[in-house]
Image (cartoon, rainbow, N blue to C red; front, side, top):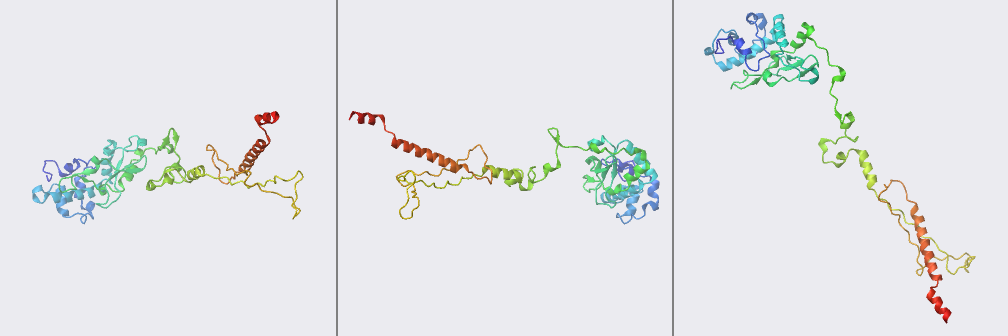
Length: 336
């Protein structure tokens, strides 16, 4: 045979590592020219490739590497047409029942058998994928099931083309063997992310609502601190406000009488402002406690009252010190 062994070329091809998804196409199907209509333009040396697949020529008759690569491409296109026939569906049924195509990687599917599928019907566009009839999703197959040895001229592994299975096969297969169609996943079977047993709401990942910071702006302090609300809160806590100074209080003149002296020029009660000899009360700034938070928009009104009280206390103390006589002076005056 062209493979260099006693086994037929088709059997040798399907037995290669990574070709577990292929089934053996019947020789009679390949020999029928009607089934090969339109494939002559897809590969070069169409006649030689067909003779190699049907074991009509040996490996010494032509360039082995180039011809084998073209023959593998031609066999994949023939295979895509064969597996949608009645005999092809029966052959794929046995492989599906034996789980030779693999199982679904989704945990909720619990090892549901999958079917090979191609996303494109044209050669050289997409690799083969697997379709799960339970979750209705398409996945990448394991590397051992999607890599062959015929697409590389240096003997390395190459990807199995999705055109070898086509876009129709898995759905026609389930329509033909509708008893193999599993029940769909229940709505509550999807995975729910939780933090300490509580479900994570979708807004936790949205920027500007106190959620996680954006990865694209890690250097921004506002994003790391968790949104505009936190920024306003921090601004109100760190803002310091100084109370306004208390107005200067006018004091009556020291020489004013009990009923109040009048100015001779104007006839109005004379009012004197405390001069340099007498300490005038100074405005006292209200000190904000460190433990309390300053609320924006609130004016401290107790500063002036506290300032007046303290000033009056100092004045009374000074007046009392002038009028009071110490006991030692009083004793000396009595002795004289």
